[in-house]
Image (cartoon, rainbow, N blue to C red; front, side, top):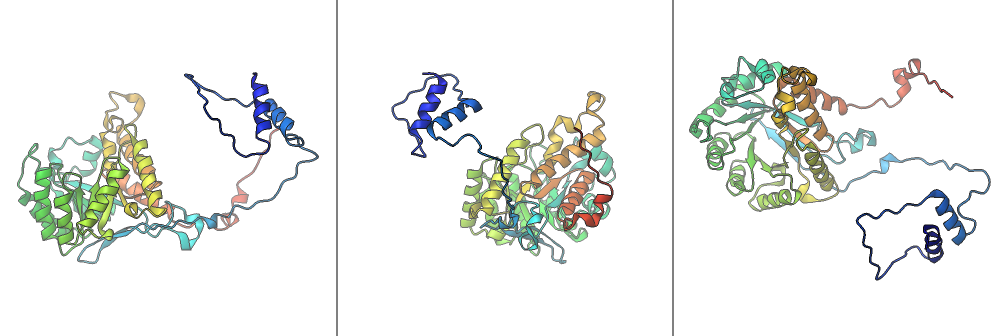
Length: 401
């Protein structure tokens, strides 16, 4: 049977039904391609349904209006606050629509733009940092307190993430008491909220959180992070000392749901949870993070309570890509590293903000400042009447025939 004959036969069979179900049919092929050529489809449909398939008379257009205001979501993302005893605070979450949906009207706008937090390390002078980073922080790398103050005073940081890398036995194996003293002094001299980062060594990180959570319990900060190996010990510390807690997973939505539910069963309040599903960098898996952040945010907005939390991302990971740090002497065709590196980090952060990122952990201060200003601009009201901007004075249309 030819394709045209088969098309006519199928059309005849389906003229009185909306569904055709084939039973006991086996198809064996390495590749199956079904192609409907316009002439064949018209002929087949016309044969089965006379009068359908050819237009009779002139075509008429029906006016239709797209009502964007009808878009609605049943869920709402939790609102999380980092609060200093001096009154300074930053707020995450509270979304009721996807990111930057400002066109839906003032009653359906998200209340808080994404927050940028600046990374500060306790052993910056000993780290193999990219040259663009060293150039910006060269005078303060050896002093994390001066580094944090510099980020706030010069670049307007609203939040600081203090990472204690030196406690890792694979690095300096420093006592956690050193980190406690640094944090205590930082809280005295830096007025913005501080996120308590860690080293990545599970045993030492639990020790670190025990002492740092206790000495900062007059503040509401965040312990960063609890994962599948440490959450059972870290989450109770956040509960006891009334801190927020970052729950970290590795690009797996089911694992994120599980750790969220398990943490709440240990007493962690909903308004203390921030999720981190892992930020992979541009060129090394950003598309996976992008889709994961998007799925989690949309699920939360559609009513999945176990995913209705703000999302954090370590966009500092952008500097792990060789395209960000490799010297232009080796790859001159890539352009200057002093611009390329910050742009790489900016691209990672902005890419994730458009699908749900609430907290961007960033390294290069100019990149961080740019992202902060950009998302602030996205939150501004668009002109309600375009002609108010005088666009007709400078826009013209030329039609070429």
